[in-house]
Length: 538
Image (cartoon, rainbow, N blue to C red; front, side):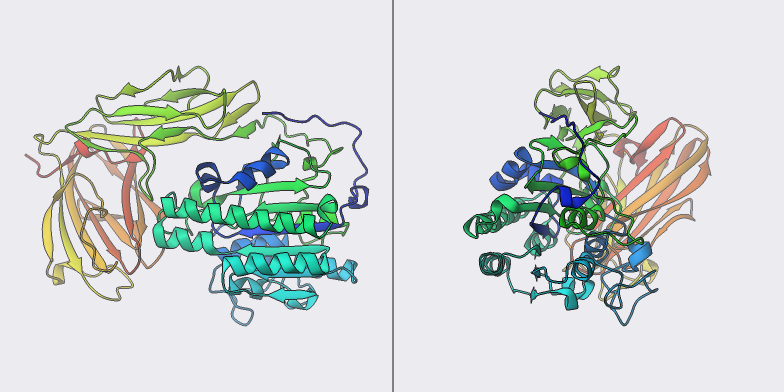
């Protein structure tokens, strides 16, 4: 990939750029994975002819309100105070550290209006909730269309008629697809392709309006997603794209510095020649512009796309999988052209001294496969991880379960007081192959975990909604409650032998998920291997 080297750095002021129009396009729930796997000719062109990273980060929690607020406010939830989708102006956990032109933390809209009072400023947003996060009094044009297509059409008309100096356009349909069909699914990727086309129509509108040559675009998102939702702490949820294209932007430039969603407002302010408030923590990503050098980032390497391990992840299911009486084949694929892949089978992070991947290979035992891509001397990827669990059907391995149905559970029920709808056995603590009652059900699991080495063990449950884990009757992990897919951890000291492990789970409504991990002496964090779980102590 071509990285443009720069010289003759300009003065540290936006006026030197001469950008007259800035358009920020935010796509709710647009993940880097969506851009990589969907048909996105417009976004591909923007990255080829602009500056970009697919490893920018949002803020925690990975909820829409918190991240949209951070994007337009140049700060995190600690400063602006918007900590969840439940936030309202008259019902908030704590006030912002400062206020802007309204009784909320200063946003890019109020900052620009105060310093450039005559500028045409617009906000067109598909999700009505976005409107409560911004200073509407600063807007020249404020519109909340009902669909993504109406949102784009409104933006196109507004650009042609008013030629705004600053415009923020928000699309919501990709997030809808993630919740309804699941992230990394065909329907989700199709929604990304629709977004790509709508972004193209907005760019074309600037050409029709005669302002394209003086316009710079930022395309980004609030969060990614995993399974049917977001709100957790995985990279799938936290990482977002950040693409800058147009006037004075370097071409085919992979951004090497760290980028956060609150840098969006700071970068827009820089382009518009306004001074950002002292309370903002975001920084303008100046290195994307011609004449501005890349910052000194020390030992930090350029980040390229991580390789893909097959079988690929599916919704919440990590790469790899469960193989009963089968020998799995591991295939690893590079997303970056001409990159070399190195891998490990023990869960250790691969380096250039690790095993080099030269083609598919087979496994004869459970393994945690990690892979990393390297390109040239200064570019490398994040680690891709896959969990392969191998088990024999005749080895007494398994997990007993009892399945229950209920209504409006907010927390785990007392399963001992309920009658199970069905009972049975499986090979792991999973709910994906059970008959679910419209999302309202619970499961009680029990098995015996083989421990080989004495020491302290950490256990983790990742669940949507609540779960608890017990070892020999002692509560170790409490992940109870109504919530998205989040992880909780607890630890216990164990001696060699078989220990009773019990997992309780419930789902209140919607999509659900459960995974159980452990980590201990000589064992990297992994889904508990099926060949270490037994139906009895015999």
